[in-house]
Structure formats: structure tokens, C-alpha cells
Length: 259
Image (cartoon, rainbow, N blue to C red; front, side):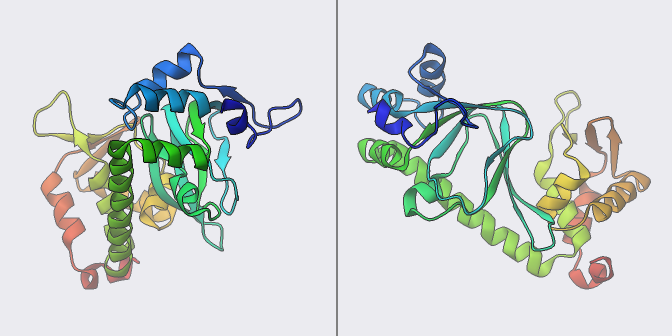
């Protein structure tokens, strides 16, 4: 029941984080169209409405911290969050950006272990939460939802494999090139052109590429100097995709001095 689900959160006066029942019109409308739950049976939607809570977060607010023991699953209804970790020296290592329509926290809900990363709000967010028990009940009630969650877990494993390979075989410069290529999108105005908008900060790109902000600054400066990419305000225009791909493909021995 809803009251049971809410016991995992402090809703009394003085609590830091306030939760709201998700059976309000706003919550129901957002959850019924949420990609993971869209098309589910009415009984499954009713189960979600009964047990879900809403949480509102401000930009830059920490939503979860590594090693927390709470296991709720979070569904991003509005806004965007970053999943990150920190090295012993304090360097940020970025795992993923989760936009509206995505979710996080399922690992702890499934295996009962503490959180494996920190989650920060990129902008103002509206989140829905389910306790581990309610989340597992939803998975058991709908094989399609369970299959979607398994597909996401497979993507996480494949992405982790790719990053391990990148760290083992690519120079720091190459890793930045690769991240730029991963972020590119077709230019909606010019055919056969590519851009990145909004361009993440140099620190955010560095976290994705497991390098330093100074390295990212040097790479972007080099790309601009060589007319491969040009930054204008919050947009990075890729002027020569072929050359950028060639830089990312160079052997580590050629770029080893740039590590």
C-alpha cells in the first residue's frame, strides 16, 4: 500500500527531502506515459500509482550518494541527472547522463547492496520513486517491463566493457575524441553536418573521458585550430567528421606522449 511505500522516506516536518504521493493527476499522467511503463496493463499501472512517490530536486542537488543503503528506484519524469563517481584524489568520473524518460537505482533494488555511484541533478527535476519491493512486484507482474530492465542492464555491461577497453588502449586525447564523436548529433539545419548542443563543460567531458579538464581544453583548442570543430556559444560544430574519426583511430603509440 502507499503508506507502506512512504515509510522508506522521512516526510515529517524537518526532513531534508519531501516526497509526495504519485497518484495526483500530474504523477499519474507522467507515469502512464513513462517509456518503461507505457503500454502496461491497467492493473500494473494501478500498482505503480499506489506505491510510487514524487520527489522534486533543484539543479545541482545531490539525489543519491555512493554507499547509501536505501534501495529505491528513481524514474526521471522531468529534467536530467548525472551519474558519477570520484577517484581517491577527488577526480570526477562520469558514468552516464539520464534524461527524462530514464531511470536509475535499479542495481541496489535488485541485489540489496549499497549504491555504487553518486547521482546529481543537472537541472530542476521531477522524479518518481518505487521501493525495492514495489519495483520487484512490478517486474513480476509484467514480463515486458522486466525484459526492458534486462535490456538496460545488458547495455550497462556492454558500455562498461567499451570504457574498460578505451582506458586500456587509448590515449587521453583519443578518449576525448571518442567522447566528442559519441555526443555528436545531426545538424537539423545543414544536411550531412554534425554538432553537439548543449556542449557539456570541459570538466564534464573530462569526467566522461577519464582525463583532466586541461586535456579537454587542449583538445578543443587543437580541433578549432585545425578547422575540425568550432565552438560557438554552447554549440560545438563538427566541420570535418572524417578527420575527427581519423584522430580517434590513431594508434596509441602515435599518441602515447599525450597521455
